[in-house]
Amino acid sequence: MKLSVRHAGLSDIGLHRTSNEDAFVTQPPLFVVADGMGGAQAGEVASGLAVTTLAAAEETEPLVAAAQRANARIYEHAQANEDQAGMGTTLTAFRLHGSRAEFVHIGDSRAYLLRDGLLEQLTEDHSLVVQWVREGTMTAEEAAVNRFRSVLSRALGTEPEAEIDAFDFEFEPGDVVVLCSDGLSGPVAPATIADLAGRSDPEEAVHLLIRDAKNHGGPDNITAVVVQFHAGDELSTDEPVTMSSAGATTAELPKAGPVQSESASVTEATAPALRSPRASLPAATSVLTDATDRRPHHRVLKIAAVVLIALAALTMVAGIGLSRAYYVADDGGYVAVYRGVPFEIGGIGAHRLFMRTLTPVSALSLDDHQRLDAHDLMRKQTAMDRAAGLGAQP
Ligand code: CA
Image (cartoon, rainbow, N blue to C red):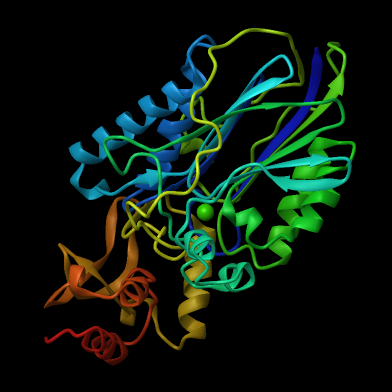
């Protein structure tokens, strides 16, 4: 069956992050969302490598093979760059061959299907809490608010071989697909996603979806791709896909990352069948990070007045001057106290090591690890106390 698609994609830095580590592609017949994580800009590199690798793949190559190649590229990059060790990304993508789509998925970004007014999640989150729900130790309601809800059990680029879900799906006229990062699916209720994605204009849909995520706090980077399927193969005339990011990172995304494209028809084509449909959730292989952990340790930022103003306001609210701000962080694997702010400005370190403890970060509980990576700014004594609270001895 021939289907035409109308689509739009949009990414936003959100309200609490200083960089956007999400990336997406809307390049019919390919649609991709990736949500990167890792220190020292590694998250952006990881998600960028994922989307560029898929965008560059031949259409005759199974999408899962391209995803495996992206995994290898990210893994090798992390091996070669010590400060980006542990980098990874989610990946949720599909490529159309007529009405059939080959999907690949790893991590906690999501693909939703809206059909006949009902919203169904086509992908399964590879997260610890979903595993706990599956094992019966937690309810779905508890999982939704659990502080470990963003801890992934699987991701792209963290292991030499990735366990990627791959499955085929047959679309029908009237279907709508939403690909999104957890910055959208977390704050925005499924009923709202269904309501907004069902709007006739996908461009309007992605804007409204992101606005709703921000209205609900916008704690993370937010990315939405909406693809609507219509009968026929005529090109429709909807607006080009847009990409926006309120931060300074848009220009730094890889060229093939946010691809601008107009709607297109997708014709019948053949592609190799995929062998591992809708894989079930395995045991956790690598505990990566959570919502707060995804923030890089030391961000290298372009001089962005808005960030400095926001930071100055933040520290003033906290009653700390910028020069008197401290924070607790990982220094070479040990708990440490830094003076300054947890990133660099214009290539100049805006922080320096104040005290390094003998407490290895590896000895910390997941909870304490979260606290460490939050990089909250505080007064000197508070930071010293915090370090001591993490079992540190000055
Ligand atoms: Ca995210």
